[in-house]
Amino acid sequence: MRVLHYADVEAGLDSPERAGRLATVLREEGGDDPVVTDGGDTLAPGVLGLSTKGKHALAFQDAVSPAVATFGNHDFDHGRTAAREVTWESPARYVTGNVMEGGQPFGDAAPWTIVDRADGALGVVGITDPDASVPDSLAVEDPIRAVRTAVSELRDHGVRAVLVLAHAGDDVVRTVARQQGVDAIAAGHVHRVGRERVSGTPIVRPGVNGEVVWELDFDGERVTTDDHDVERAVVDESVAEILQAERYRVGLEDTVGYLEEPLVRDTAKRLVGRERAGSLVATAYREGASADVGVLDTLAIREGPRLSGTVSRGDVVGLVPFAAPLCRIEVSGRTLSRLLRESVVTDDRAARGPGAYACWLQVAGATLGVADDGTVESVRVDGEPIDGNRDYVVGTNTYVLGSDEFPAVDRRHLLAQGDDQYEAVVALFEQGRTSGIPDGFVEPV
Image (cartoon, rainbow, N blue to C red; front, side):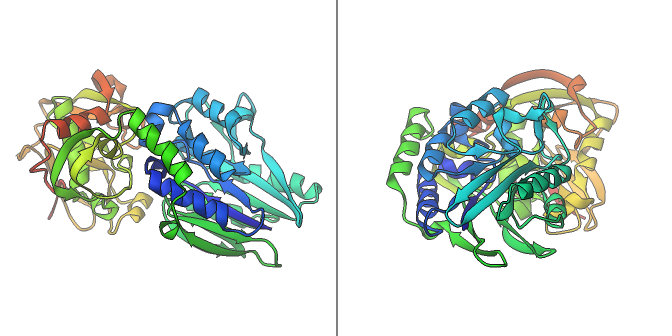
């Protein structure tokens, strides 16, 4: 029995060629009749999903026929109704043991399912990380308890093996791996390609945007794993043509500007506040809100290819493909100083970056002097120290206002909301104002 696992396809479906290669791998690898599994974040974030409410993913799922899928946190980006409709229309059986609505698994999902093949029955459990950004209207219960309950019930049904689809971070996934009765974990949520064993249980992660497909072989006493590189696969033209036609239909191929200097998304540089892409989006927020300072959450900027030369609407929206309004807020100088200082973190979030700290906001209009250990030595707005006795206008988004990651600000500071935040980035390109953007906002001290 073999499983082919993908997860976090996200913006991979915005690239018809990438999606076509991924479809080929899922159709042609894994031997006869493999069990294809979807680890979540297939409906979003991505540019096409903003127009289709995630339903563009159904064309891909119809092509690759996943047997089982679970929910990623971004699968709810377009709202519960849209997520529920895709769940009903998908060829996959959705499973979740811990994303609940009204005391039941969301969207008519099951807590677990059994997939029968000629060589045995595979039990599949689905879980989502409670710390992920699932809507507050849904209850995300203890994933470890959900796995224990499902394993017990599946073993009573005599399954040959139990696979956990875990859209979750490392701590949750590794704890699940230590549970008795779990044979393998096909994970998502963390955007890296990798595999490891914890307490003998294999864990695989396929990265983001369709980087690899993991194959799990349950035929021997020990589950073995192998990765299939999507980049080298032949494009499935039938899938590519459907998605390309959809891009034209919603205007994603329209030209919006030109870049004389390539724009490269570099997560490591962004996390230390020295990346031009982060500064560009923050500048768009600042100008779009007519503000003194622009800020956005660092993880809002999605991975993707570098942009250069003629740039399309889809290219630009793909930098921050979230339907969140651009917000204009007013804060005191003391509050602004607190917001910017607290955005340089040295806790466990710093492990995502290359050094002792991570910048949890991207900033325009202000500079931070930061020591190697993450100590913020200075904060300046337009080259001048922040005046604690005056008010400042800040352009940001609703996530920053609503997240407990940025406790200095909330909706009490809101002056106005505008169009979806990515429209400000498109406007920056359309106005030809992308030159001279600085390479970051952090100055080493």
